[in-house]
Length: 399
Picture 1 (cartoon, helix red, strand yellow):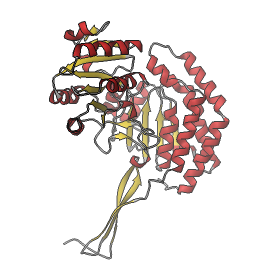
Picture 2 (picture 1 turned 135 degrees about the vertical axis):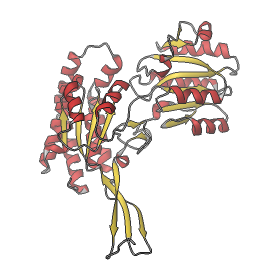
Picture 3 (picture 1 turned 90 degrees about the horizontal axis):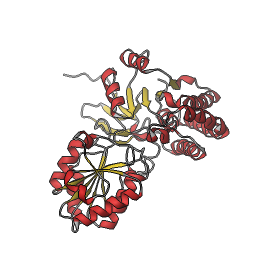
Picture 4 (picture 1 turned 90 degrees about the vertical axis):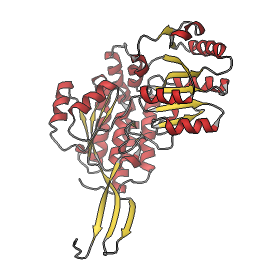
């Protein structure tokens, strides 16, 4: 793949900013057609589908931020001169071709493509059928920006394949794929991992936990929990499970307080059987499966905790490995929680909603990775490259 100059890439992004702004009415109209065709049986999916002026402004800002970031390609990671005279330089290099498969959110069409392009990779966008009109309008903007700067459209391609066609493409790709990122629920991730013939980087599943320790500042803990649960229910960083330590002073009255506070935000609550009498309106947890479930809804599960060790074990068993927070005034307890909970992001006295590229200072993100290879957390520009060794010699041979 041709390595583009930083200037060339930034010129494309500058064109893109102007084109998106000029065509915002067309983009919003295309999105309106998607919204009208959508059956509103999944509120979280519908929320992610919406494109309005604020969303378009966010797309423009994402492109601008990436344009202003340092080019991640060709950066020296290490340099060594060996005794045998070899000079070995390890530096960053493009992946090649990245495919992202995602549901609903049309803004991913901008954020994923801008990151891949600035990282000098070709990207194949496989959006959901519910956003087909929005995605087509946005990819038209990309193609105009590319052609305006003398580049071919194939740097950024939109696939409108159905499930069977996608399955066949994953099994027998018509071009070389270097990385696939499924951004969505567990069914999508399992589907891609089953059929893909190249590396798959898992992203998207949340099922995040909060642990209220016995020494938590209650009002602070309640504020964090409400924000993590209600700020954006469709986010993969939203809170689903709340574990309250049984040694929390006034345990029963605080459970009632928490239940009432969440009910004020119309959050449906599930609770362990022994806690039902303390949480008005809560329903009993139907099965163990609920502990594994990512709700993506105004819904939360409340359980009793019997100390930090049990909490760590439970989170590591049931969570999606995305985000978890401990609410405590004890810094040593927080340190143990943060070291031993196996999640991409761990928090002390803060909302899980901060697991986001922009909020963490990474900038626009391709996804939130819950994999351990090659990176966990927000996949920003710096994480969308691989590496390559350059070895310079003068006739050296190995004995």
